[in-house]
Image (tube, rainbow, N blue to C red; front, side):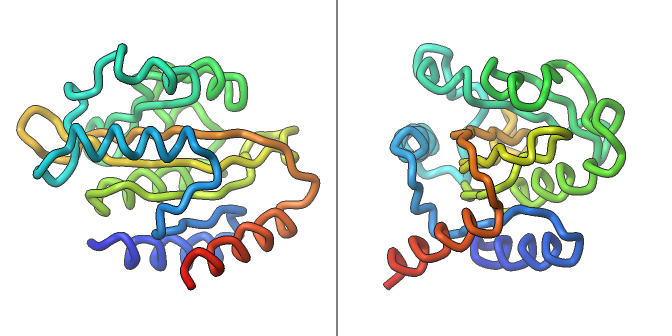
Length: 187
């Protein structure tokens, strides 16, 4: 599924469910560290559909590790957190080694599943803007680079998510400003 179709599908689902999140297929990031990670992912991908998890060494990812999470699909549609950086854990709680469906509140599972499932189906990186889906942290927003990773056989199996967290008093205002930048960049 191409990136633009994935974004439209996700945004329709988010609107239907009232999720404070927007998927942007343009990959025009506001934060330079996300651009740098995108360049790394594209370089290691080469001419393959997506990079393999094994391509990403700790040395290569050192500037991003605290800000990223790697999710692995296990047992059909269940997702395990393989790695969760300290900044990510500070926002969501440390879920390293845990199964999303078992360890986050049931009302939040559908949003996680939809994001991760569509990221795998996109076979390429996506940009998300979202209000944190964490009790007591509605002020927290983030820009994310979300990208599928292949296993040794080249099949989509994991999703890398790298975030830049910031604060916003009003999600609607934050998204409106972001949409102006997206529109200006598309012109």
